[in-house]
Length: 483
Image (cartoon, rainbow, N blue to C red; front, side):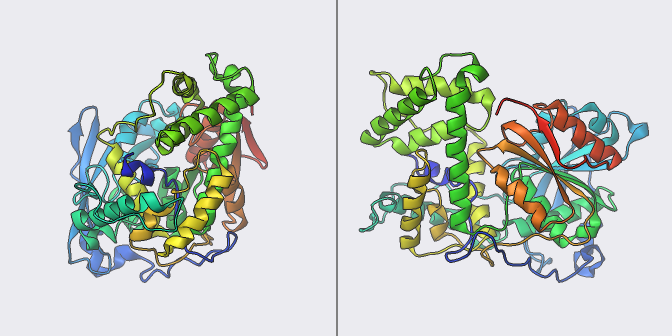
């Protein structure tokens, strides 16, 4: 089993033991309300992006300090990409797109979406994306590849997580050594928010236009909380949370994965039109249970769970999911192999772990992770129990959780899909309780981060908001699929 896939299963982990799921700590007080007016940061806010052609788009480099409290120290160089408005004469401004993960490249995302986003938005905005610090083409970059086998032995008395501990410990040590501790400690979302404000100014935006997907919604929420009056329009699609502690966060997402598996079992035939691993939901779930028992016996259960969970999020992948389950269930099937690493997967894996661990406090006591593993295994058949373990040996965040209020912010549009394995719908439902300017558009369907192709209803509502600042009437909803 690849130790990277132990930590890859940490989808949205962070926090501290003993925190409640409903309360969060306030955001850190911003030392400078107008950082663009801080003389120490002037060189960053006044830099000029040198846009140059890259394929059909334009590319540049953004320079930001590693540590905003020590701006004369080391620097990050971040790739930035721009797709210019298709009707320049009607251009409203710049729209920054925030990628998911943590770990996904915003540059790669803009290359993918520039040709598929709704024409009404593409006509009126220059679309800009960036690689967050440590990710993709960032220099320096997060590097976590361990060498050789783990030197330590599995601790006793931890039956669910003990075997994974040596590899996870080695992995964390490699992240710190290969990246440099000072750089690694400044890869959290608070620093990305500071970078986003620099990007706002250097792209000529008095007020930010922003659309964040998944983890990009965490960036957006924390930006709004720190700079509520510097926003023109903000869309958060596939809403992440900042207010849960490390354990509740992991458990809630694991519940959502199990719920999506049940939906797959009920809707497989109708959604895919392909052979399913059973004639009905009961048979399909029995097949999944049989596959997991088989792969557990072979010592490959964690990889099988990872592969199945990875294909649950989007119904477009469900036909492939059925094929995977059928193949694993075949009498002659070999044990599941870990998915082959692709060039970008290391970034996603490494940042998913490190950024989530930096964003909220987490325990160092392994007994807390063993106890959490028992709850996770009860919550979903697809949980290995090790989803939270990657944080045990990495630096912790300053607060267990955080309540986003963004007082004084304009209306912020949330898009929450009702069956979302990656960011549970409940997270989008609860955010307006504290972020009073938020308006929720509920997308009744299975999926995650849907603007730009999977729902014309969502596309129309979001486009109207971005262009005209027209918020859909509450309760706003789109019925995009059978749920």
